[in-house]
Length: 328
Image (tube, rainbow, N blue to C red; front, side, top):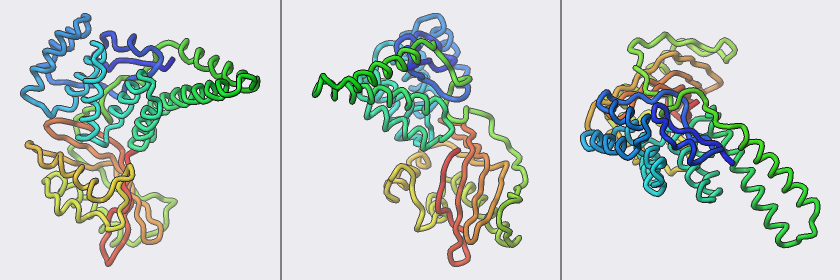
C-alpha cells in the first residue's frame, strides 16, 4: 500500500482513504481568517460543512490557490475523487510551478490503478521541485506497483516461471513493509515554499569562489538583468518580461515556446497586484554563461510562495539573456 496524509491544517479523514500513499506538501498552509470556521469544522470531522465554508470563500476569491487546494482535499475526504482530480488539474494549469498538485493528482490516479498516469504526474512534481522527498517516495511506490503488474503478466503467460514468482513474492514483501510503516509526513504540509511573508530587503549577491572569474561589468550586467526580469514580472509587462529570455531558451516539461508563454501570461492577466522579489543571490560564471541562484518571493491575491530558483544566463550581442530556468 502507498502512503497518505491529509493537508494540515485540514486533518479530517483523508489519510485513512489512501492509507500508504503520501498525500501532502512541504510547508504550512495558511488560509485567511475567514476560513477559520472551515478549518474548525474539518478538524471536528465535518468535511461537508467545511466544504460549504470553502465554497463561500471561493465565491469571492475564485483564484485563491490555497483555498482551492484545501477544497480538493475535502473532496477526497468526501469520496468525490473525480471532482478533486479536476481541481488539482486546474491548479496545475494555473500554477505549473507548484509541485504538490502533481503529487496529489498522482495519489488519485494510483487509487484508480492508473499507475502510468501516476508516474507521469510524480515525474512532473520532481521536475518542478527536485528535492521534493514525498514525490520521490511516492514514485518509488508507483514503480513497485508497476513492477508487480509486469511480473503478474509474465506469470500469466508462463506459469512455470519460478524465478518470476520468487521476484513477485519479494516485491509483495516490500509492498507490505511499506504499508506497515504507518502514516508519515515530510514536516508540515502546504503549497510549494509555503505562503510565507516575502522579505522586503534583498541581500547583496555572493559570487561563488570556485567559479570562473568574471569582470565586474559582467557581474553588474547579470544582476541588472535579474532585477529587470523581476520588475517586469511585477509590473505584468509581458513584452518586457519575455524579452529577458533568449531565443534558445528551453521551456520546462517539453513545452513549446508558444505554449510556455501562454502559460506564463495567463496569471499576469488576472486582476490584482503581483510582487516578485529576489534575495540571497549567488552568481557564478563559466565562459559566456552565468548561473544565478536566489530565493524568489512571489505574492499575488491568489498565492504567496518562497522558492529557490536558478536562472542560467547566456551572453548574446552584449546582453545577458535567460537560457534555462529551474526551481530547487
